Amino acid sequence: MSETAAGREAVLARIADAAGRAGRTAEEVTLVAVSKTHSPEKIREVFDAGQALFGESRVQEAVVKIPLLPSRARWHFIGHLQKNKIRHALPLFELIHGVDSSALARDIDRIAEEMGLFPRALLQVNVAGEASKFGFSPDVLRGECEDLFQLPRIQFEGLMCIPPPGPEPEVSRKYFAALRNLRDELQGEFGVSLPQLSMGMSGDYEVAIEEGATMVRVGTAIFGEREKTVRSRAD
Ligand SMILES: *Cc1c(COP(=O)(O)O)cnc(C)c1O
Image 1 (spheres, protein in one colour):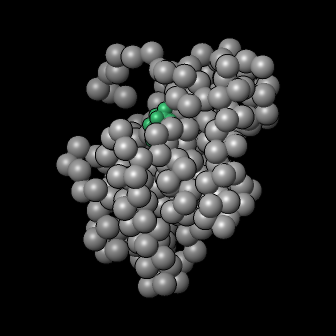
Image 2 (tube, helix red, strand yellow):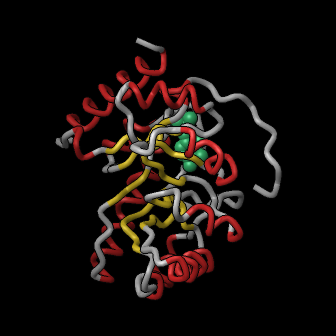
Image 3 (cartoon, helix red, strand yellow):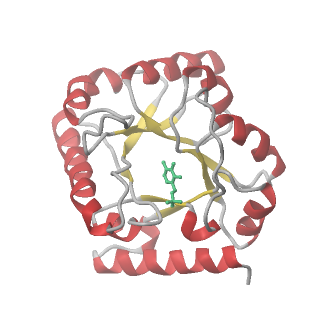
């Protein structure tokens, strides 16, 4: 078995254990294998091991890689989507994890209408109030929720967050719980359905599952360390 296939097996086993601890089943948790920066060959290896769903965070990179992989592979966009990339992204990705402002939501909605699409999306929440992070503050989201859910094309299915990185997974727990509580509150207050909670990465996905994650975005634990890439400001 390849190293990536073994990594994936280990992640799936830990997902099942974490789900079990929370009285949930492994089927309630979707593994998004985060393949950003990795080569099509390496992604193909993970695909051949049974992984059909991948996450990419840069449109320019995904546009090149996705056509090189089997059409049965499925893709989620997990990065910050820039306005001028929406048109390229919408046909490639079945779910946009990080809609992080009302302006972006409206742009996606308008372009989806032009393209005849009904994109699925999650709302990104800046749970720790970090100045450097994209995402709605909980208060802004409460205020804008009603308008967001009236957009005719974009379909919001839940919330997503990226807590501050740290060595200790337990530190993330309060942020994951906060995202779940906010979801419960919005569902109650606005009568909307937000079944998906995208939370948890290689360092803390088990804690996220214990707190209700339905999607975990795991890269390093499957693919190994990423090469440090020089990222341009434009992307
Ligand atoms: C890169 C990335 C991940 C995966 O991170 P790992 O620590 O490698 O598992 C998850 N979510 C987002 C939004 C990312 O950008």
